Length: 71
Image (tube, rainbow, N blue to C red; front, side, top):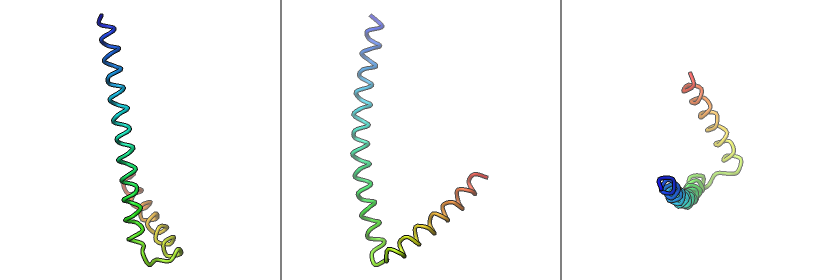
């Protein structure tokens, strides 16, 4: 009987995990949409060239900071 209880318990946990994953995916999708909207607003008035330059500079800054953390 204990084996059946264990299996049922595992199935319940799997269903709960799948529901949590679905909710997390929906929430992440909403967060990405908000992030895209914020980025559009932040870059309003920038040319494509300026936007690319800013992204390149920020990537360099991130790389510099990553190297500091890795020390």
